[in-house]
Image (spheres, rainbow, N blue to C red):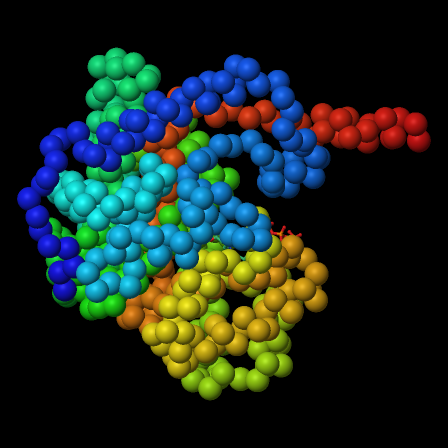
Length: 454
Ligand code: CMX
């Protein structure tokens, strides 16, 4: 199952990636400085009262150069659409999906890496896969009924004592250099987190099988499949999954939490553990498990034969009438079908078009948007990434749907870690927006004045 032939390292300690990153950072810093110094007073957005009571929706108040989310087009990583990313990044021999490590390179540098560059990074990351025993002990100490996201968060948190950034900070390195140790921490954590995920899976769902050690000849996606005990094409499924979940600009709960925590100079272990906690909510990453739960309930009733449209419509309406959301549909920013949904749909159409659960997902795609439009609440009636992701996992034998958000978290850590390295590089300050009281807001919008006049 080896996709990546072990080669002798061609490069020495300061990796090509870190060198390239340094170049990019030095070139970028004057832009940030200039914006703050010379253009700091330019108004770029207005805040409406509805945004203050409405979860700050749409307020332009964060910077991320890693990715940008257009409401109609979907996500672009460093300017590249998902189809472009899948086409341009180097792939393992014979694989359908690119190396995940190549995406890390792209997100950090803005450049598509060459095959040699990715292979060097893979070697570097494979050398960082050693996990201290106490992390396994932390995982093993959890009861088997614990949610895997809680275990993942605790396991990442326990690794905090390995932070190089903390050592450097205590040694008093200057602020301009913080990004270097942050890069080391981030790359260490990124190399380790898939192993932790696979260990959690084995502990919770395959306890008799024992834990597989990583195979140093395999890239991130293939090694994850190997450690999970899943055959091809689960290596490609993992690569696809980690890549599409990596980033979704900076304002979503997981990305923003990671950035917020890191802004106080907490290290990446604190930040990613917090990111995982934010992702574990059903309105965000946990929606992928909720989709499967919702689909299986429907399938239990009707079996492998998808029922007619009116039955599906009624099922959707029953969910809405019970005051619940339709999981996997809607989005705070997107206003069209999520391209992450489309990538997975195309993969499913190619590999398992006749799978009954996929048939349900396809049939619901034709029904849910209509119903949500009639319902009249959701601003976006179209499916998001989570409407499709569980079905792919299910088909390839990962049927313990509580685990799906762990897969999302492994992917999301690529973007969050890349953002944190750049946050440190550009020396963004501690985040501190202003809150006001309800009284103040009422006064600002004029409610007080109107009441006084009455
Ligand atoms: N089903 C039913 N109602 C929905 C809905 C859905 N899928 N999506 C939105 N709505 C409702 C909202 O609950 C809200 O109702 P209230 O006015 O009663 O509060 C109203 O429509 C307006 O919401 P919105 O502005 O369209 O959406 P938000 O930005 O507030 O929320 C999201 C976005 C994703 C939380 C919401 O669409 C949702 O709950 N979807 C289902 C859960 C889901 O799939 N989450 C995963 C999103 C992707 C990810 O982060 O992984």
